Image 1 (cartoon, each protein chain N blue to C red):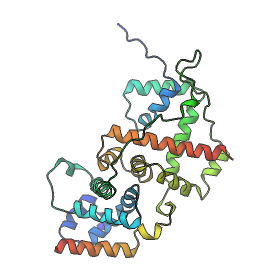
Image 2 (image 1 turned 180 degrees about the vertical axis):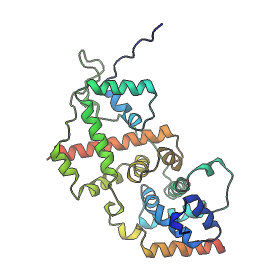
Image 3 (image 1 turned 90 degrees about the vertical axis):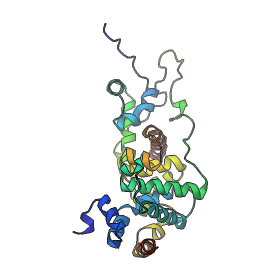
Image 4 (image 1 turned 135 degrees about the vertical axis):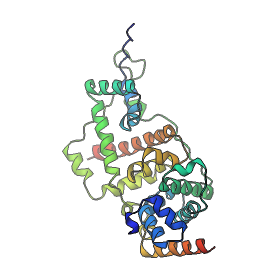
Length: 203
Length: 94
């Protein structure tokens, strides 16, 4: 059977018997997301590659009986990437402080008529915005904004929204509760939405 | 005794709950409160649409869009693949 037809778990098992094709298949499947995750921490591409290599070394190591083996292969690899990048940079994952959306965009809680309602509401994104969003430079602009998010929100957004990992895999890779991971995601998505809003409103 | 209806959420509260709403993890009652707000609020649906559009746009970000010209270095080209497979050979024999 071609390695491409095998599940990640089956490929991992084959890797442990020394099957190089199985390892190459796992790499092709998950390398981009894992390097993108490592790149959320400071450092260059070389450091990120090293984090990912260390992660595979850890994942391919002896089968452990710890509860984490219930995780998907990529979540285990992601967790090892995050650990390696944290050790390398001494930067733990920290949630950003502060309100989600600029509080000045809402009427204050004590407002007589509209407490907590929008004072400066978002405008619907019409056709012009759709055209702007479909332009070739937009993914590059978003990728640049993701790099500016900071380690923790950037990592959560990279795994969940760019690489489509499940919420559970994302939380497990970052060794957070799902609620903590969602909190990071909330902050990261709002930052990206606000960046797009500014970009679209400026046109 | 009938349960009192929950007070209407404010826009600020809805914005705070939206990621949990979109991820489908809000308790049923809270989910219904957000939906009820979105049906009557003139402004929040635009915010939801912006958030969904942003998530959709992020799904189109690929390796080649990553800044600082790291594509050649971190994309899984044949060179990187060979290097890692060679390392794998070393691990299994080591």
